[in-house]
Each structure stands twice: as C-alpha cells, then as structure tokens.
Amino acid sequence: MALLNVTDLPFKRICTCTDGTVINMEKFIEDLRPAVDALAVAGLIKASESFGFAMAAPRLEVQPDFRYAWDNPLEFIWFVGGWGPERDRYIANAVRKLRPMFRQGEISTLEMRFFAPEGFVDKVDSVDEDGNFPWGDFPWGGAVSCVLGSLLLEGATSCLKETEDDPVSHLILGLVGSKIIIGDGLLPDD
Image 1 (cartoon, rainbow, N blue to C red):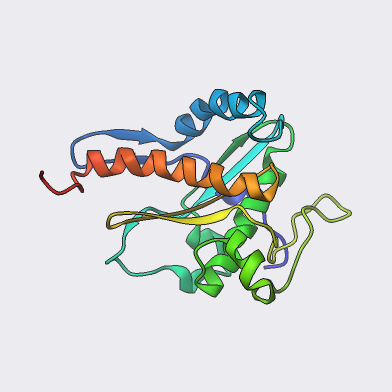
Image 2: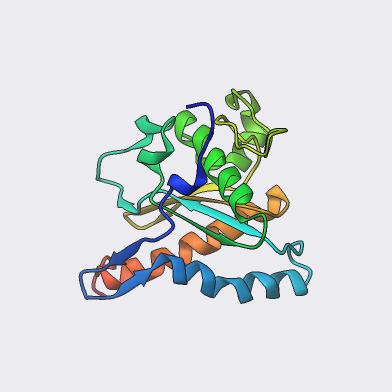
C-alpha cells in the first residue's frame, strides 16, 4: 500500500453490548466535540477546529491479537471519526500512529518517542505535496493502549500537541470502555 485512502475506512460502527446497550461510535465521537472544545477553552489542550480519531476493535485480552495486521489498516481499523475541514488528514495521522505501536507491540507512541524512537520506520509526513496520505509511520505520540480489567482498547487521536493527543485518546477509549464494561457485565460482582 503506497497511500492511505481515508474514505475506505469505517466511519460508521455500532457496538451492541450483551445487555442491549448500543454504542453508536459515530454519534459518540460527535458528542465528545463540546468536551474537547471545553478542554481547549480551559487551556488544557490547544484549540483546533478539526479532529481525527481511529480505533481498533475492542477485545478481551484473551482473544487473538490482530497486531499481525499492522501494515493493513483495513484489517486493524474498526472505526474512524472526527470533524472539521482537516478531519481526513487528522484521521489519516491517527491511523498511521497506530501502525508503529502495533508493529512494535508498544503501549503508546508517546512511550516510543521517549524510550524507543528507533521503532519508527518508514516515516511519513501528514500529507504529501499532492494532498495524499502516504502509508507509513506517523512518528508522534497519540496512539495508546488502554486496559480496563480484561478489556483492551487501542486507538489514536490527532490534531493536538502529541502530549495532548495521548491523554485525549485515553479519555475517549476509557469512556467507550466504561460503556462496554457495564453493558457486557465485565465487572466482577461485589
């Protein structure tokens, strides 16, 4: 794959939990926009009129790992979403942040930036001179693994400073994970 075509990725995804809870991921991301804007207004993250997010399928840690597909986003991406005029560029960046994390088996690309920068290979810019998204590693923080009990969620945010993308990714994955944990009854009885 030479270029990433964002329009080939899944913008619509419904997650239905065992108790009937329905998580419409497209709406979930749209509903987060006021919260992201509020974080910017509070000066906790930079303001951005565009936003991009990408996520692998939530899974229980005992389920097979799909990281073998690190070089094929059509296999490892479960959902993408965002907003604004630069949405597709930021979604492409988020997807390309997940690639090195999956290939290297790391917990986040921010950790890689600190401790294993040599793990970024085939580095690409956000966009090429023709406006395309070259396939390779987008070598910045923002891709994270979030473990909640036995539930593993992996995703990436792009549009902020890399040190801000990282906690925003954790926030989004944690909120999705919370709904799945309750909806699937994954918490042990008290």
